Structure formats: structure tokens, C-alpha cells
Length: 158
Image (cartoon, rainbow, N blue to C red):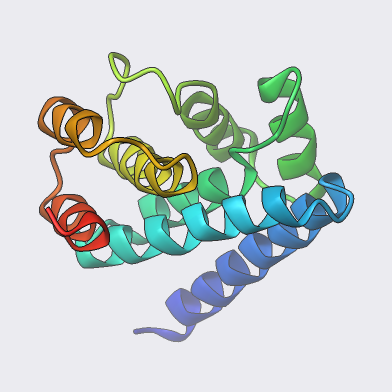
């Protein structure tokens, strides 16, 4: 990895960490909400890396996973938070699209968005004690990444 690539990677990591800090403040210490976005972020990050996303797609995925739990006007809330982190308008627009459509399974157009959806579903299934039949049905209809399917199977002994 060149020096410029290494610097870019460090800057992206710092930006994701800054976004996570702002989200912790955004949720005002609500441990359940903080734990939720941390779980989604951790799972999405792992799936993205194992699916070998490009560096830029991985960055967008990680940002989306961190800010996906904003409330109210999701686009404006996420956009404001991303702007406070110094994220470019182009990346912010893509992240906001993923956040806005994190539960709309018919509008998944990119692999990073697919991974966000899969990570969020796995965490939601665990947090809501989703019945096995529903997990299997949604898995068949929505999951497409090999890593997401593997994590789902292992999380629920399917």
C-alpha cells in the first residue's frame, strides 16, 4: 500500500470513529441504541471486508452502519452528522440513500447497501427474538452475500 493510500485509509478510519462518537452523543447515552448501531457497524464492517468491497465502498458502508439509527428526518439528520465529520457531498448522498432505504428491500442497488441490510437484519433478528420461520423466509428472500448467509446461519444455528 502506498503512502497516499495508507493516509487515505487512516483518514477514513478517523472519520468513521468521529461519526461513531457523534452518534453516541446523538443517542444521549441510550445504551440500547448505542449498542444497536455498534453491533450493526461491527457486523457490516466484517461482512464488507470478507466480501472484499473496494476501499471506498467499505468506507461508505461503515459510515452508513454507524449513522443508520438516526431518527426523525433520516436524510437531514444523517447528512448533518456526516457534514460535521467532513464527509464529501457525494459520499454523504450515497450513505443517506442507504440509510433511508435500510428497510426497503426492493431498492437495493449496490453491494455495500446489500451488506448494510443483511447486517441490520441479523442484529434486528437477535434483538427482537424473531421466530426461526421468519428468519428463514427473509434469509431466502433478501440475503445474497455468502458471508451474510454464513453469519446468519451461525448466529441462529440454521
